[in-house]
Length: 383
Image 1 (cartoon, one colour):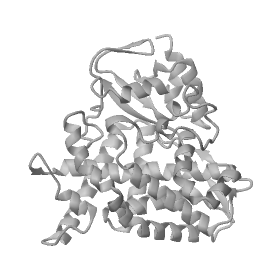
Image 2 (cartoon, one colour; image 1 turned 60 degrees about the vertical axis):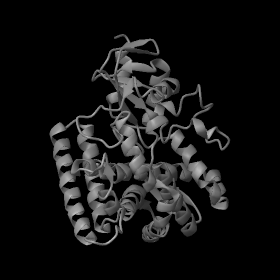
Image 3 (cartoon, one colour; image 1 turned 30 degrees about the horizontal axis):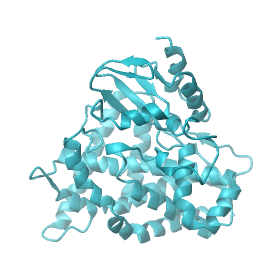
């Protein structure tokens, strides 16, 4: 098709900030096929249309079970109702002290160095440890989750399907081992961890299968490790380069959550999600047949000038309801309250132990490459 030469760059690894390439592509061809033959949707209006029409645009795109992300109505609703209580305010607030202690210790250790590499020293360890705490897993598994996440991203980056299958099997074995440990400690007692509670859940009058539990726990662990660590890197990088915003949040911590949502609109931690058409449809003048795969580019949609004036600018007064950071529609992220709490606690503890965060002189950060977002290497100085 005529647009394909323009859209092929979507699948390349950008040496610098991929957002600029996405911005250019959105203005040239907001809906177009990439080099692999899949449709890429870059503009806000079309992404929003897809999110609001789950009947035409199915979430059943993977050959592997994905609960509930990869399910359509009505099956999706049964599992969504089951997991939503795990992210209620009363549940997640139980973990605030543990999350705070984790952040405090990591930041204290990082401050002992003249300069710290944020991703390896703080962002990934924090993300891994708080997810283990949330599920009642041993803290020692945090490094395993981090390594698995990074290997999975690398295998996806080079399209190594065999390695991706191996990693999937490795995670299934890990979850099976954890569930056996959790089952042994449970015995006749009431559940004491969220994993144990999840193992007792029922759908359609039966307990969740091992495959269903593995899918849910994969989303709640390695999925969060990748997105939370990327979010921390993006937020701290922004604050290191925008001291006026950093100072405002130090003086007004009650603004942290709204601020992080806006920063992550400017630079999103998640690149895209997939949908599959259930019937022929037209998007932005392009005819798409039934059964074709569509990628919704979150980063590009959240930077669309038609919705966000001067999208690179940080603005407190933007309409937060338009922000697609956590999605929209029936598949909006159920873990948003937990993610926001984890980010808020990290910033509060970082501000409590520092006076200023700034880039390390003479050191250059490295941007992540697809399918990840954010930074792979981020040297900073804490004072």
